[in-house]
Image (cartoon, rainbow, N blue to C red; front, side, top):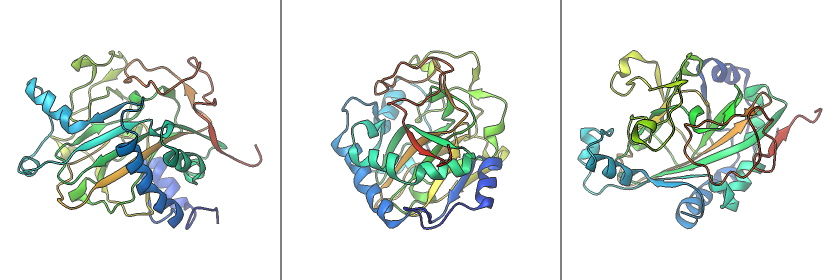
Length: 305
């Protein structure tokens, strides 16, 4: 058994990832890595906030959008929360949080990506740390990760891991199965709203991208699966898979998570003008270059390579 894992990935899980675009690897991480997650996330969000990496209070963004007359995602249950909690997110916290960097680089997550990809090499690309405090009203609007990355290739995934018990009430992740194989590329949004970033004037338009359909408003048209999570689980989704989540309606539970992004053999650097600024990325890569460099290190390779 590979150190850091309770079990290996099954052939069925590999097939699920490739056909549906998402798989929940239940109870696969060892207690060592599960125990490290909570302190690492807390350190990233509450100790290293605003240390040169992009960080957002999504709840505050909701207030700004509303005051400007822009539409935001909400529902009656969320609006009834009297003392809303915060929805905080940090991009690139691994660059300033040693505890999180150790998980990204040294845990068996890179190996899990290789198994799902069928890759001989895996590179770490970036991370997003997310905390929905008790009563956080803000949604995570449906979106794909692809337009936020400067990458091109099929072997790109996000590994969503949480130290907490996460269910539908606290903001479990939802995925549109099979959408990673849809032919369209979709515009990025602000999470708090379905409105594309370029229409809000905070990103450049990309002529290859179109707005997402109104999945939230027409859920019955789509094959949506909700994946709850327990400590030790790893939820892996393809970078082009449509996904999102609801508020944390609970009053006594945080929903903490980190999404660690990995890339495999077929991935090259490709600048996407639609992507928000990533000031923590320091490199000299050009379109079409292999991504391996100090910024995007190799974290796993087949011993035979």
